[in-house]
Length: 331
Image (cartoon, rainbow, N blue to C red; front, top):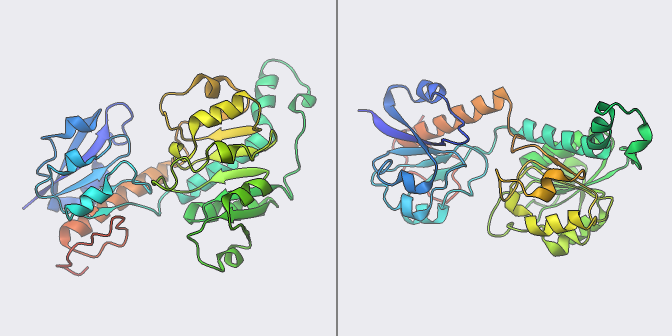
């Protein structure tokens, strides 16, 4: 008997045109229901009977929606981050929540390096200059040499580690702050460990953020942290917008207290504040760091495969809320 699997996607920024990949993975075991909505409120009464849910980040899954789920055996966030889901309430209801932490690592790391190279090499300045019919290299002003440039990584998980390896290939010095990584991980990746965030910020010429959004990391980069940066520092965020206090960042940019900023994510997205939109110091990339044709297909396939394991009562290793399904069938 087929079980309903709801795929929650957005009208405004849809990720799925047709659930062909999901249908291929789930086969005859599920009936797919593609739910295009603009808000969590629209889900009420729409997914109550679903046996499993695939969630895309543009629509939140709060407690008020999760409380109505009658037969749900699992929620799978189709991405690495899961901050749009109330995972604690799902745990109270005994519903496993899983994510897909191992997709798009290459793309986000490559995108981070693209932002870093573009900003350090002042492409945001010289590009428009040349397109306006001018041809004077001196417009770029001061440009540091990449070899020996100091890159500080906030977070050394999968993506942070991939960025470290790419940066080392360009000859950058790489350091990191991540209190959750075990002793010796610095030796594994040939990077320098800093014991405090402020120590890392003081050392870095460029700072790149690679942490999930949690209660602990929300506004991790606030006024006190931004005050430690200089008018030459490069700041890059390809993680989550709320990790940076956006208003404090706007004030720092407006006052010229920070060098250049590369943002793939905003706390206000898709709305772009005027300062971020018009400033020559800011390069925006519309939450596209994750994307390549292959990475989008990969995350869809892996999310559907995770749902299939949950429906079958098979082991699932990417549970994020501590609720593991009772194993009823070994693979």
